[in-house]
Amino acid sequence: MAKLKFSCILLLLLICSCTVENINLSPLSDTASTVSGKTPPYSLKERKKLIVYSSEITGLMASFPKFRSTAVNTEVVNLKYYLREYINAMEAYNTKDLFTSHRKFEKSYKKLQTLRRYLNKDEDAVLNRYLVRIKTNMTFINAIIPQDSLTTLKH
Image (cartoon, rainbow, N blue to C red):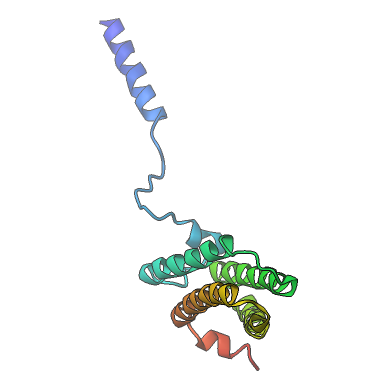
């Protein structure tokens, strides 16, 4: 009888000591909302779209080819850097950095458009294909991000 009581008490202590206080069964973690102490700025649907568009941009950045022109390659490196800044600012919901990195991206994009004329026909077509896909995804991202917060930074 004493062995049975001792076994029951030991089993009860084992069960109680192994319980978890906070169980999170959600597929999305709550770290995004608890890091800053605020609610997430994007809805779940918007967040999914932002992830899709930004992941395509980062995929394009990773697979960007090298060109014969060193000026084009240098500007491609700058464009990649500004895109990385933009994506990081978007993830952190930092509107000031988002606005400045977008302006830098636009300047670099325009400079690449002018440098395209120094490339041969095949390289020009490849560069144009990458730039169009990046610009399209940037446009989709800008459509999701609330623009009223960015307009106050322009002044």
